[in-house]
Length: 412
Image (cartoon, rainbow, N blue to C red; front, side, top):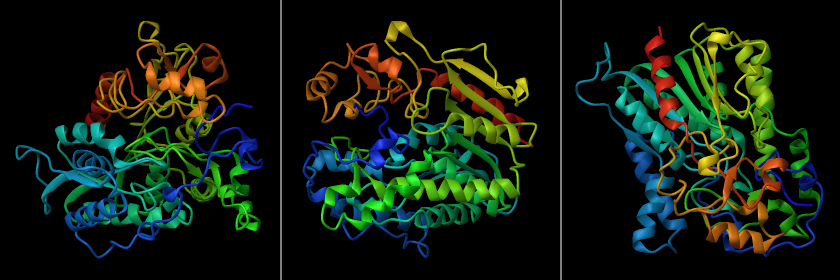
């Protein structure tokens, strides 16, 4: 049976069955010993950035000089300051600031385009690196979601020292962490969420059952063992990562059950998402209370509005572009523009891991002929249409920025 989903939703059997042909584990599938816990709480943000870059350099020392600069710039936390002409804070340097948080197995690279947008709109920008990320996949074997939450809380505190108004923005797991922090921190004034992970497959709760026997069969610690060709994301995926995102979503759902979100929320997500449950995101927005809320929903059917959200708070956006061979939006396609140099239509990287290792012929073809491939989410219908790359960029990114600008202008 082919894997139809590449992260923690997946085909549920992946959590329970052993693969018939398992690629061998390599050095990158072991913990580095440097990136499981968040230990930067006492550092200034600039020192935290420098410390993280040093850690990444040490772990990924096999990269050559030119590639190492790309690895560092795409995987390290970063910060941007708004133009001098932007409004100042009352007692702090800046009026508004935003903390950006990437997704599971991802890196801050996925937040770069959003960071530039926020900077251009007079936000002080900080972006964190979640523990276990940016180095090697083995660093996710022992990490706990509470360490991710520490990084989120740290970034929020550092931002609070410089801005009057704090906003949090996250992609996927980063969106979940943003909501977790906001539910505990009344300093947060609003949220920007992209493909947030509010619900994943319940079988993820069983992901760490492997600990009973994985001492004997180390590959049992992994949902997928991949080539890891990407510079700015892990392709291999350990079961512990699934267990941790499940535990985090359960914690957030418990908090939301007690206290609905009453600050402004902007959310963009795909109706065809095969990584997280879009229905849970729609339900979250239906229960969020602020009149400024906006849900941007990428869909193949722009006539079907979610029934429980005021129509004026929903923007349905077409996700099908036949002339560009785009069949639908994907979980991975929200935060970057079409011309992104790495993930774009003719970029350096093709997301083809759904063919590996079961169909190496298609995997190779998918990587070699990006101009000929279809792109979209890894739905059964899309996969039947032909060789498919998972879409990593947003053909509607320019209109997304316009929608975000309107939301910002409506903020109280």
